Image (cartoon, rainbow, N blue to C red):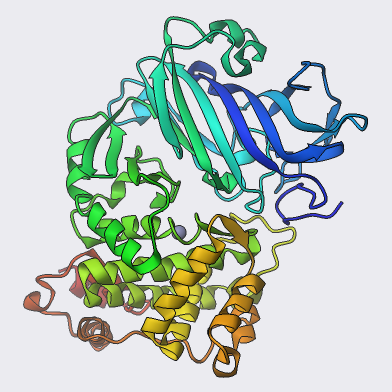
Length: 527
Ligand SMILES: [Zn+2]
């Protein structure tokens, strides 16, 4: 057993899955999905094969050609981080390049958020959506749940006909179910016979670009959409006002995509659609390819909502095209994306906005380093996550320290050279999953002598903030920070000084106030 990823049972000596064809029956009353999955391997395999699962019921493992059962076992205990290990035994005498598994999810699936009608905007229909990052795809279907194992997929989602579905995939068709399609005749518990019920519809999808499993995504509900650009629709529940507000908020998306293409190369995912979720979505945004998920709280009518979209769009190049090989190299996803987001923001909103965002990030990074002063491992870019839940490891460090590292390289070699470097990096590693060493080797080969100017080991393996990190400078940034410093001396900003402030200006101001404020100052501040 040679683990490929500290967060997966995938064995590096085993063959990897390259395609999964899913047939999923959504049973809203029991908050359960019943599924059949056909796995295709990169080459024929015999002997043991390890898959990740979490809170899944496995019904059958079959050879797809003969439908004869294949032996399998589930680990008797559930690892609190990795879940339950599903070990298949593929025949030794006739290696298989595909196999079939039927399974059901659990209502407690860590990737699935089931909403009852009262939890939605329109309060009429239920809603379900996924959040598979970091390691939750395994609670929707069995898989080699590591970003090192990129997969293509197709999916038939069988849903109540009053609902519709979106996925991180190309929408092929919405049509009547077909009896027995996609091995749906093998679904358990009688759901095979319900597949073609007249109350159901099939939404068919295809994703022919290889993605890490954490980018698998769907949402099912009463959805509507508005066109906001030649390759962008904004989707949300078809509720009064929500779609209109979202369409207005994200009207500038095409401009951002074009700026991104100028900076980082072609947009490879064909469409860049946005889904505004019900308010329970626990993140600002999730960069699911072709279909970014957003919380409705980003619809604020100021520049900050567009910055969330800029971040998720930037992932189209960094994170989705080039992906960290495992979560120990998460900064390759988020540091690059934070850098790319700010370049897009600079291009569409101007340098002052980008510097404000860098400044808010700089304060956040300094606060995080203080928070982790007793756990310095958390302040490294390249981390050791053996035995660590990636969700508990989450912090601003990979985002902001990663940004600072790349910004430092940009200052050292100059922006034109760094822009060329970024384009070449993306073109070289697109649709691949890489680690920190691969990036550093590429950097040293393409910026000769860089290791003599910047301490690359200190930046990637050291703790805290290296001395060549940099607090940004701009008139607006400096003015806000000095106004916050004056608050400590008892001076409040005048009304005319804050008249045109938006959310970000206030955020930066508040971030720079002392953490402990005297009661008398609070009264002053609120008055
Ligand atoms: Zn991100």
